[in-house]
Image (cartoon, rainbow, N blue to C red):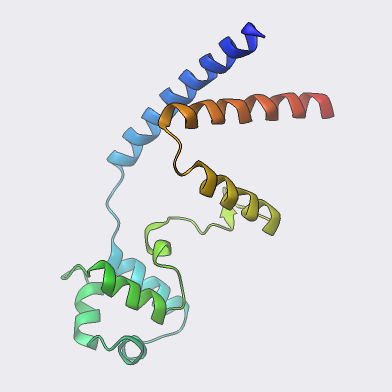
Length: 148
């Protein structure tokens, strides 16, 4: 039993190192161009700036300034634009849609499971998250070897 805890602690340390590396990579990443994201979503939906203006009450010239990077909108304004585009505010900040990861479509069951994990793990401390991740890795490794 002690070996299992030792192995879990080692895997938790490895997970911490991976998280540190991921954070460093994220810090080095280019900032989000929110204006370009808004334009892309708007064009994907076949909408004009005038359509957004009608739905939000924001002036077309303001939307143009946002899309061209001359003005940074507030979160309230972003929420209005997201609503007009019939999307979630968080989609402006994500690089890939939730339903796709590494080119693989996720089933509704997997999305539901991941949503539950996110909800229940939101208030965990960082060490508890690392431990949980290590346990999941151990379980997945055990399951994959027993199936083969």
